[in-house]
Amino acid sequence: MPSVIPPASRVRAADELKQAALEQFASVGFAATSLQSIADHAGYAKSSVLYHYASKDALLEAAIEPAVAAFEGILDDFLAARGSGRRRVLVDRVVDLLLEHREAVHVFLIQGQSLAELPIIARANAAVRRLANAIGRERESVADQVRFGIALGGAAFLLTAGRTFADAETLPADDELRTALRGVLAELLVRRGRHDATTTDHD
Amino acid sequence: MPSVIPPASRVRAADELKQAALEQFASVGFAATSLQSIADHAGYAKSSVLYHYASKDALLEAAIEPAVAAFEGILDDFLAARGSGRRRVLVDRVVDLLLEHREAVHVFLIQGQSLAELPIIARANAAVRRLANAIGRERESVADQVRFGIALGGAAFLLTAGRTFADAETLPADDELRTALRGVLAELLVRRGRHDATTTDHD
DNA sequence: TCAGTCCCTGTCCGATCGGTCAGATTCACG
DNA sequence: CGTGAATCTGACCGATCGGACAGGGACTGA
Image (cartoon, rainbow over all chains, first blue to last red; front, side, top):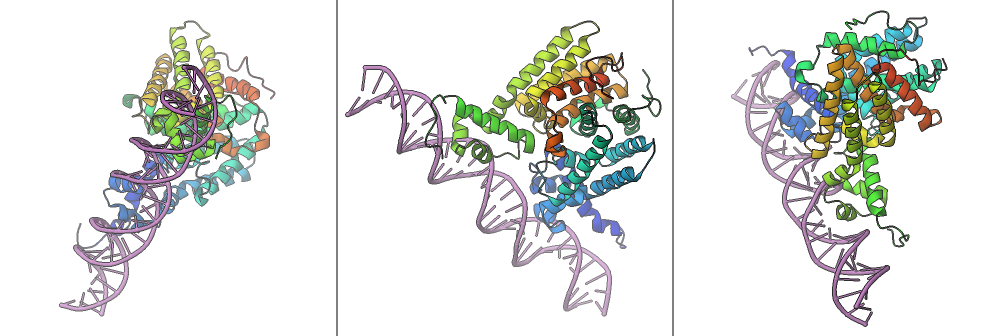
């Protein structure tokens, strides 16, 4: 690096630590992830983690807040929208969110109940519950509630935990995944119009 | 604490501890669950946990082995079966397994990657991977792999973590859940005949 | 009554946890 | 040059972790 210090190097350590933390929070769980192992994975000392972030909780908040905010934005737009295309738009945007923030979403969806006392998680839980209620109000059958739960949890599972069970060679590219996810989730949640668009069914 | 012990309680302590452990393994994660809190929830001292079970790992094994064995049995039957009804039978039996062993299944599905070094988890992972391969071999499209992952993870999520997001009054009885789950999973995995049977579509 | 066995617990251990703090190093700016 | 702010670290703290172990109460058969 030349004498002129890019502002990037300022934020670099914090970002590297945040990324390492996020990966481990999602894969082994928040409680099971130690500051030591986060530091190790990022190539710093444990003290450095607590220099950049006030506490382990603060680190979690920094790691997943963007994803929570994005989710809230999608939800607000959905609740404000009217018309027949609402659900399809919701599904497409949620799929994009999942692909971009898969670890973060995995954290607040799967570990949402055990970490509910943390403010950022409580915020995420509230948003998820708001979405569940909105979906449930429209179609009150148990089958539809089940569809919603399966779609949400299944997608989160597929993108993180589910990778344990896929062979490396089988792992599809994100573009393929996006298309397939949109199709399958639309099948589950967008009830009228069976599976007309978006899907590339090479069947 | 327990100074007066009810009469016929030979096996009871071990079972109570196992049950308390299973609930916490599923809800907050294996690594995040301490022997102390297991003992507290069951009303015993920490030492008692290690009297009945040789180690924390052994306790996990005792807690989820029956579910893993049942899953392997279902899988073997599926792989041995021929004919058009295979998938529907598989779905129905997996749904029953999920309802009966929801915590255990949640543990080895959701935490399968982080606990892979434990023998019982490795065994469960192998079974899941075997099932994934069998399903994937029949229909190789990415959409079908996605369908499988979503169905499996989604169902596990719905029955445990997903409960955070359901209001208590909304929680359906197990019978209703079973019917709905069978229908939705069949929609996802049993491709021919769209949603003909089993489902109680009051739509 | 006494010995043996089964349950259960308190106490102790080394390791690791999240977190504090006092330097060490670096570097822009006077 | 000196100085102050920013970055990073090792040493250290009390609490808690999984686990080892000795012993105490309750029940049994002799």
